[in-house]
Length: 283
Image 1 (cartoon, one colour):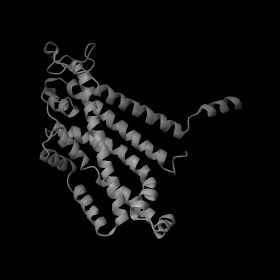
Image 2 (tube, rainbow, N blue to C red):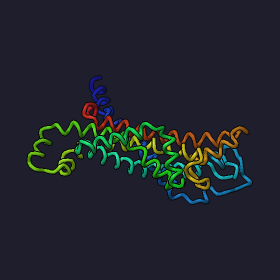
Image 3 (cartoon, rainbow, N blue to C red):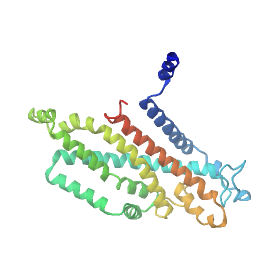
Image 4 (cartoon, helix red, strand yellow):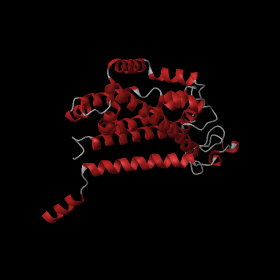
Protein backbone atom coordinates (compact mmCIF):
# COMPACT_ATOMS: atom_id res chain seq x y z
CA UNK A 1 0.00 0.00 0.00
CA UNK A 2 2.84 2.36 0.86
CA UNK A 3 4.57 1.58 -2.45
CA UNK A 4 1.41 2.47 -4.36
CA UNK A 5 1.10 5.79 -2.52
CA UNK A 6 4.76 6.54 -3.16
CA UNK A 7 4.31 5.82 -6.87
CA UNK A 8 1.31 8.16 -7.03
CA UNK A 9 3.22 10.88 -5.24
CA UNK A 10 6.14 10.42 -7.62
CA UNK A 11 3.94 11.06 -10.65
CA UNK A 12 1.88 13.83 -9.03
CA UNK A 13 2.30 17.22 -10.61
CA UNK A 14 3.33 20.04 -8.33
CA UNK A 15 1.96 23.54 -8.70
CA UNK A 16 4.88 24.78 -10.80
CA UNK A 17 4.46 21.96 -13.33
CA UNK A 18 0.70 22.46 -13.58
CA UNK A 19 1.14 26.19 -14.07
CA UNK A 20 3.81 25.62 -16.74
CA UNK A 21 1.58 23.16 -18.62
CA UNK A 22 -1.34 25.60 -18.44
CA UNK A 23 0.80 28.42 -19.83
CA UNK A 24 2.10 26.17 -22.62
CA UNK A 25 -1.41 25.04 -23.68
CA UNK A 26 -2.72 28.61 -23.76
CA UNK A 27 0.34 29.85 -25.66
CA UNK A 28 0.11 27.02 -28.24
CA UNK A 29 -3.58 27.80 -28.91
CA UNK A 30 -2.96 31.54 -29.34
CA UNK A 31 0.16 31.01 -31.44
CA UNK A 32 -1.68 28.49 -33.62
CA UNK A 33 -4.55 30.91 -34.31
CA UNK A 34 -2.04 33.71 -34.90
CA UNK A 35 0.04 31.79 -37.47
CA UNK A 36 -2.96 30.10 -39.15
CA UNK A 37 -4.76 33.38 -39.69
CA UNK A 38 -1.59 35.17 -40.78
CA UNK A 39 -0.94 32.74 -43.65
CA UNK A 40 -4.56 31.94 -44.50
CA UNK A 41 -5.57 32.35 -48.14
CA UNK A 42 -8.46 34.78 -48.80
CA UNK A 43 -10.15 31.98 -50.78
CA UNK A 44 -10.95 30.26 -47.47
CA UNK A 45 -13.48 32.98 -46.61
CA UNK A 46 -14.41 34.04 -50.14
CA UNK A 47 -17.90 35.22 -51.12
CA UNK A 48 -20.50 32.57 -52.07
CA UNK A 49 -23.88 34.23 -52.39
CA UNK A 50 -25.64 30.90 -52.94
CA UNK A 51 -24.72 29.86 -49.37
CA UNK A 52 -25.61 33.08 -47.54
CA UNK A 53 -27.06 32.71 -44.03
CA UNK A 54 -26.30 28.99 -43.96
CA UNK A 55 -26.63 27.89 -40.31
CA UNK A 56 -23.80 26.02 -38.55
CA UNK A 57 -23.46 22.49 -39.85
CA UNK A 58 -21.28 20.11 -41.81
CA UNK A 59 -19.98 22.35 -44.60
CA UNK A 60 -19.85 25.53 -42.50
CA UNK A 61 -18.80 24.80 -38.93
CA UNK A 62 -19.67 28.32 -37.75
CA UNK A 63 -22.24 28.94 -40.48
CA UNK A 64 -22.09 31.50 -43.30
CA UNK A 65 -22.73 35.26 -43.20
CA UNK A 66 -24.90 37.51 -45.40
CA UNK A 67 -22.42 37.14 -48.29
CA UNK A 68 -21.97 33.38 -47.93
CA UNK A 69 -18.52 33.66 -46.41
CA UNK A 70 -17.29 30.84 -44.17
CA UNK A 71 -17.59 32.21 -40.63
CA UNK A 72 -15.10 29.77 -39.14
CA UNK A 73 -12.21 30.82 -41.37
CA UNK A 74 -13.29 34.45 -41.18
CA UNK A 75 -13.27 34.34 -37.37
CA UNK A 76 -9.80 32.75 -37.33
CA UNK A 77 -8.51 35.41 -39.71
CA UNK A 78 -10.22 38.18 -37.75
CA UNK A 79 -8.82 37.01 -34.43
CA UNK A 80 -5.37 36.76 -36.00
CA UNK A 81 -5.62 40.38 -37.19
CA UNK A 82 -6.66 41.47 -33.69
CA UNK A 83 -3.76 39.51 -32.16
CA UNK A 84 -1.24 41.12 -34.53
CA UNK A 85 -2.41 44.61 -33.59
CA UNK A 86 -2.61 43.68 -29.90
CA UNK A 87 0.90 42.21 -29.81
CA UNK A 88 2.56 45.14 -31.62
CA UNK A 89 0.64 47.76 -29.62
CA UNK A 90 1.39 46.00 -26.32
CA UNK A 91 5.09 45.77 -27.10
CA UNK A 92 5.30 49.48 -27.95
CA UNK A 93 3.21 50.49 -24.94
CA UNK A 94 5.16 48.28 -22.54
CA UNK A 95 8.51 49.68 -23.71
CA UNK A 96 7.16 53.21 -23.15
CA UNK A 97 6.00 52.22 -19.67
CA UNK A 98 9.34 50.58 -18.83
CA UNK A 99 11.44 53.54 -20.00
CA UNK A 100 9.22 56.13 -18.32
CA UNK A 101 8.98 54.15 -15.08
CA UNK A 102 12.74 53.63 -14.73
CA UNK A 103 13.62 57.16 -15.86
CA UNK A 104 11.01 58.77 -13.59
CA UNK A 105 12.19 57.01 -10.43
CA UNK A 106 15.89 57.34 -11.31
CA UNK A 107 15.90 61.02 -12.30
CA UNK A 108 13.38 62.23 -9.71
CA UNK A 109 12.65 65.92 -9.29
CA UNK A 110 10.71 67.76 -11.97
CA UNK A 111 10.98 64.96 -14.50
CA UNK A 112 9.36 62.57 -12.04
CA UNK A 113 6.53 65.05 -11.42
CA UNK A 114 6.05 65.53 -15.16
CA UNK A 115 5.77 61.77 -15.79
CA UNK A 116 3.30 61.39 -12.92
CA UNK A 117 1.26 64.27 -14.34
CA UNK A 118 1.13 62.53 -17.75
CA UNK A 119 0.10 59.27 -16.04
CA UNK A 120 -2.69 61.02 -14.11
CA UNK A 121 -3.93 62.79 -17.25
CA UNK A 122 -4.10 59.55 -19.24
CA UNK A 123 -5.74 57.59 -16.44
CA UNK A 124 -8.14 60.42 -15.61
CA UNK A 125 -9.79 60.29 -19.04
CA UNK A 126 -12.20 57.49 -20.02
CA UNK A 127 -10.02 54.92 -21.75
CA UNK A 128 -12.31 54.16 -24.67
CA UNK A 129 -12.97 57.86 -25.36
CA UNK A 130 -9.23 58.59 -25.42
CA UNK A 131 -8.69 55.64 -27.77
CA UNK A 132 -11.38 56.87 -30.15
CA UNK A 133 -9.98 60.42 -30.16
CA UNK A 134 -6.42 59.30 -30.94
CA UNK A 135 -7.57 56.82 -33.58
CA UNK A 136 -9.79 59.42 -35.25
CA UNK A 137 -7.05 62.08 -35.21
CA UNK A 138 -4.63 59.65 -36.89
CA UNK A 139 -7.05 58.79 -39.67
CA UNK A 140 -8.45 55.58 -38.20
CA UNK A 141 -7.46 52.39 -40.05
CA UNK A 142 -4.74 50.01 -38.85
CA UNK A 143 -2.25 52.82 -38.12
CA UNK A 144 -4.73 54.83 -36.07
CA UNK A 145 -5.84 51.81 -34.03
CA UNK A 146 -2.27 50.62 -33.49
CA UNK A 147 -0.98 53.99 -32.29
CA UNK A 148 -4.13 54.67 -30.29
CA UNK A 149 -3.81 51.43 -28.34
CA UNK A 150 -0.03 51.81 -27.94
CA UNK A 151 -0.25 55.38 -26.61
CA UNK A 152 -2.94 54.68 -24.01
CA UNK A 153 -1.85 51.47 -22.25
CA UNK A 154 1.47 52.50 -20.69
CA UNK A 155 0.46 54.48 -17.52
CA UNK A 156 -0.33 51.52 -15.23
CA UNK A 157 2.88 49.70 -16.12
CA UNK A 158 4.80 52.96 -15.61
CA UNK A 159 3.46 53.19 -12.06
CA UNK A 160 4.38 49.59 -11.28
CA UNK A 161 7.92 49.90 -12.66
CA UNK A 162 8.43 53.25 -10.90
CA UNK A 163 7.38 51.74 -7.55
CA UNK A 164 9.87 48.86 -8.01
CA UNK A 165 12.72 51.22 -8.90
CA UNK A 166 11.95 53.51 -5.95
CA UNK A 167 12.44 50.52 -3.63
CA UNK A 168 15.71 49.61 -5.35
CA UNK A 169 17.12 53.15 -5.03
CA UNK A 170 17.55 52.73 -1.28
CA UNK A 171 19.40 49.39 -1.44
CA UNK A 172 23.06 49.27 -0.41
CA UNK A 173 24.46 48.02 -3.73
CA UNK A 174 22.75 50.83 -5.67
CA UNK A 175 24.07 53.44 -3.22
CA UNK A 176 27.52 51.85 -3.50
CA UNK A 177 27.34 52.04 -7.31
CA UNK A 178 26.60 55.77 -7.11
CA UNK A 179 29.53 56.34 -4.73
CA UNK A 180 31.82 54.48 -7.13
CA UNK A 181 31.07 57.14 -9.72
CA UNK A 182 28.64 55.31 -11.95
CA UNK A 183 26.15 57.45 -13.86
CA UNK A 184 22.40 57.21 -13.34
CA UNK A 185 22.00 55.55 -16.74
CA UNK A 186 24.63 52.94 -15.91
CA UNK A 187 23.09 52.17 -12.52
CA UNK A 188 19.63 51.87 -14.07
CA UNK A 189 20.94 49.58 -16.82
CA UNK A 190 23.13 47.34 -14.63
CA UNK A 191 21.19 47.15 -11.37
CA UNK A 192 17.57 48.23 -11.86
CA UNK A 193 16.45 46.79 -15.20
CA UNK A 194 17.30 43.16 -14.27
CA UNK A 195 15.18 43.46 -11.12
CA UNK A 196 12.13 45.00 -12.81
CA UNK A 197 12.12 42.53 -15.72
CA UNK A 198 9.70 40.09 -13.98
CA UNK A 199 7.24 42.93 -13.36
CA UNK A 200 7.70 44.09 -16.94
CA UNK A 201 7.11 40.62 -18.44
CA UNK A 202 3.94 40.04 -16.44
CA UNK A 203 2.71 43.55 -17.24
CA UNK A 204 3.42 43.01 -20.94
CA UNK A 205 1.43 39.77 -21.05
CA UNK A 206 -1.47 41.33 -19.15
CA UNK A 207 -1.49 44.23 -21.62
CA UNK A 208 -2.33 41.87 -24.49
CA UNK A 209 -5.98 41.17 -23.56
CA UNK A 210 -6.65 44.86 -22.95
CA UNK A 211 -5.13 45.78 -26.32
CA UNK A 212 -7.10 43.08 -28.18
CA UNK A 213 -10.38 44.01 -26.50
CA UNK A 214 -9.94 47.74 -27.08
CA UNK A 215 -9.02 47.20 -30.74
CA UNK A 216 -12.19 45.14 -31.21
CA UNK A 217 -14.25 47.72 -29.29
CA UNK A 218 -13.31 50.78 -31.32
CA UNK A 219 -13.55 48.80 -34.56
CA UNK A 220 -17.02 47.64 -33.54
CA UNK A 221 -18.01 51.28 -32.92
CA UNK A 222 -16.76 52.29 -36.38
CA UNK A 223 -13.60 54.18 -35.38
CA UNK A 224 -11.09 51.44 -36.07
CA UNK A 225 -10.29 49.09 -38.93
CA UNK A 226 -12.17 49.54 -42.22
CA UNK A 227 -15.16 47.35 -43.09
CA UNK A 228 -13.29 45.33 -45.72
CA UNK A 229 -10.80 44.05 -43.10
CA UNK A 230 -11.78 40.66 -41.63
CA UNK A 231 -11.36 41.73 -37.99
CA UNK A 232 -13.42 40.55 -35.02
CA UNK A 233 -14.79 44.04 -34.42
CA UNK A 234 -15.92 44.30 -38.05
CA UNK A 235 -17.55 40.85 -37.94
CA UNK A 236 -19.45 41.70 -34.73
CA UNK A 237 -20.57 45.06 -36.13
CA UNK A 238 -21.91 43.34 -39.26
CA UNK A 239 -23.71 40.72 -37.18
CA UNK A 240 -25.75 43.37 -35.35
CA UNK A 241 -27.69 44.07 -38.56
CA UNK A 242 -28.96 40.49 -38.78
CA UNK A 243 -29.07 39.18 -35.21
CA UNK A 244 -32.67 40.38 -34.75
CA UNK A 245 -33.71 38.13 -37.64
CA UNK A 246 -32.49 35.00 -35.84
CA UNK A 247 -28.98 34.76 -37.32
CA UNK A 248 -27.46 34.16 -33.87
CA UNK A 249 -24.32 32.41 -35.13
CA UNK A 250 -23.04 35.61 -36.73
CA UNK A 251 -22.40 37.12 -33.28
CA UNK A 252 -22.00 34.06 -31.04
CA UNK A 253 -18.91 32.41 -32.55
CA UNK A 254 -16.72 35.52 -33.13
CA UNK A 255 -17.66 36.75 -29.66
CA UNK A 256 -16.69 33.40 -28.11
CA UNK A 257 -13.36 33.31 -29.93
CA UNK A 258 -12.55 36.82 -28.73
CA UNK A 259 -13.50 36.00 -25.12
CA UNK A 260 -11.48 32.76 -25.16
CA UNK A 261 -8.39 34.58 -26.46
CA UNK A 262 -8.70 37.29 -23.80
CA UNK A 263 -9.17 34.70 -21.02
CA UNK A 264 -6.15 32.70 -22.20
CA UNK A 265 -3.95 35.82 -22.21
CA UNK A 266 -5.16 36.55 -18.69
CA UNK A 267 -4.42 32.95 -17.64
CA UNK A 268 -0.87 33.21 -19.00
CA UNK A 269 -0.27 36.54 -17.25
CA UNK A 270 -1.67 35.50 -13.87
CA UNK A 271 0.22 32.20 -13.86
CA UNK A 272 3.45 33.88 -14.95
CA UNK A 273 3.00 36.18 -11.97
CA UNK A 274 2.77 33.10 -9.73
CA UNK A 275 5.91 31.56 -11.25
CA UNK A 276 7.98 34.75 -11.05
CA UNK A 277 6.81 35.69 -7.56
CA UNK A 278 9.35 34.42 -4.97
CA UNK A 279 6.57 33.73 -2.45
CA UNK A 280 4.66 31.34 -4.73
CA UNK A 281 7.23 30.29 -7.34
CA UNK A 282 8.58 27.38 -5.28
CA UNK A 283 5.24 25.81 -4.29
